[in-house]
Image (cartoon, rainbow, N blue to C red):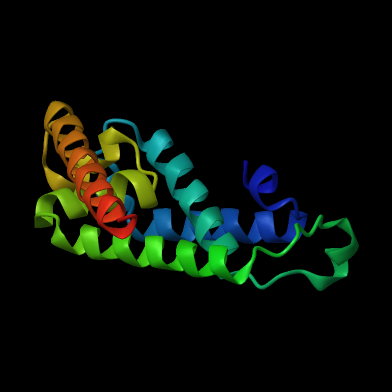
Length: 149
């Protein structure tokens, strides 16, 4: 799995080793998990994703990369403005909604893991995510309508 994410044998082996180290440090807590195998796989996936986020570009493979045309300056500014406004909207969400959206969308955690971390039931998590998405969509549409006037 790590190799599929990283496409590099050495990096994949490093991520597996990091995962084993983290699992070893949490070995007492693993006994209480319903599905420790799923936890281990999720931990490995998250380690790989963190590694990819932090990794610097590999310039030795630059010829393999298809570089798209540059967006116009206006499009770049618009995209930046949209992202900044979404960040403002996220800060306006209630704490619980912000936390659940972070875990669900950005950390890509399954509902079972979110249940363990927050103590909330799966149904509650789905309701919170739905409400947060609705709020984000409504606030973004209001902002977008005001921008286009």
